[in-house]
Amino acid sequence: MIMTSAAQLTLHSDFTAGEVDSRLFGSFVEHLGRCVYGGIYEPGHPTATDEGFRGDVLELVRELGPTLIRHPGGNFVSGYRWEDGVGPSHDRPRRLDLAWKTYESNEFGLNEFCSWARSAGTSVMETVNLGTRGPTEAQALVEYANHPGGSYWSDLRQSHGVEKPHDIRLWCLGNEMDGNWQMGAKTAPEYVRVASESAKMMRWTDPRIELVACGSTAPNMNTYPEWDLEVVDGLYDHADYLSLHTYIDPKKDRLAFLAAPMQMEEYIRRVISVCDVIRAKRRGKKDLNLAFDEYNVWRISDYAANLPKEWRVAPALLEDTYDVVDALVVATMMHVLLRQAGRVKIGCLAQLVNVIAPIRTVNGGPAWKQTIFHPFQIMARHARGLSLQPALRCSTEKHRELGPIPVLDAAAVLGERSLSIFVTNRSASHSVPLQIRVPDLQLGSRATGLVLQNRNPRMTNTARRPDAIRPRPIRPVPMGKKGCKILLPPLSWSWLEIPLAG
Ligand code: AHR
Image 1 (cartoon, rainbow, N blue to C red):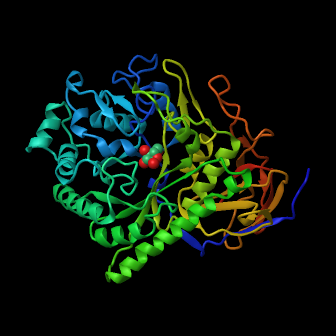
Image 2: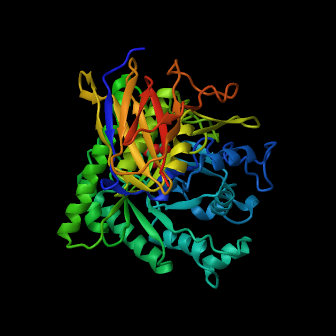
Image 3: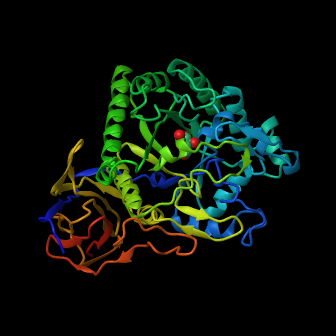
């Protein structure tokens, strides 16, 4: 076995990065490809519930444990008329979705989604269309969803058989509105105008709601960072969160791919600075926090090279198959969210089923977990409590363009009964011995954990071999007075749980 020199991780409960918001473990359901139709909803499926929800997918979603699901888009929302998706199913219009060149039957809409989310044990983050529509329709949607009754839209909901309001607390003011691929894309002043008027009317309808404004889609957009400066300034009094998105394309060489979450962390830091400089400028009293409401690995260049050529119903789009390295990158993106938990309060793995997703299905057939399912599931369950700032010393690997890349990446969360440590080893050739030091906490006598790794890092799960990749338990680690030592295999992601003594 080839090993590097020992690395050292020091954690101290006085050095914290903030409380982990439970909404950091969200996901995303867009009307895109087979995420809804053939994904969460398939009335003819052998496991379908009375409402047409796939029972096998519901079980996997419960196991995955997302705390929040963003809906219904994404690019789709920017041309969506939400009214098409409520009321008697046979009266609902079939529309062209221009975002994904797809026929939308509208068989599945807001009420079905809220009912599905309840069955899945998760809450809803709904997005209003600020592309082709505006404040009037956004207000009507909040009234339909949240008003108890006695008004046009809330009575309409009740006439559709939904007596009680859905009580949706978290709303996005459009999606990626600076992107020219978006229906009704806007300049920053145009967006501020429509979003501020929508926000006002939405809040007047239900003052309990929280609102997420669109940040610039990505740091490589030429709208960045001016868009963010203008939008935060214009919406400072209206929004509670600014939205950020990042997709990492594995087209790059492997080390650059594994290192890419470092740029995501830089992006977060810069956008926090934007929020804070505007706060100072406005003599503001609140921190504008961040909603990282789309992130994942996405072979976006494959999609761009094979754009849909004809109109279809629920086509297989963006059905990326994930291998072990992809799972390490997703895990490392989640480390970034944990380390930035002081300001990033919402996170959504995009998306949930079939479309760049942790869960895959065959229409009429099985559903299974992709490799990225595992780190998400473990962190959604165990990264709860106080995020600690990891002080990590490790060797680096040199990348010709990016310079030295640390071989390890870590995050740690102190819960009520245990300390969870998450570590990625980026080295393809070396196991790394890691000395963990926790000088100030009283720890139990041994730690347990799981590791995700395979001799073949390109290995994936498939319908036939749904468990080819899954985490395996590590040998229990004896705890010394102030910590312990573990060995991290090459290209691996590990979770170590150390119980607190007493
Ligand atoms: O998640 C896929 C797409 O990526 C979403 O529709 C859009 O918001 C983003 O560009």
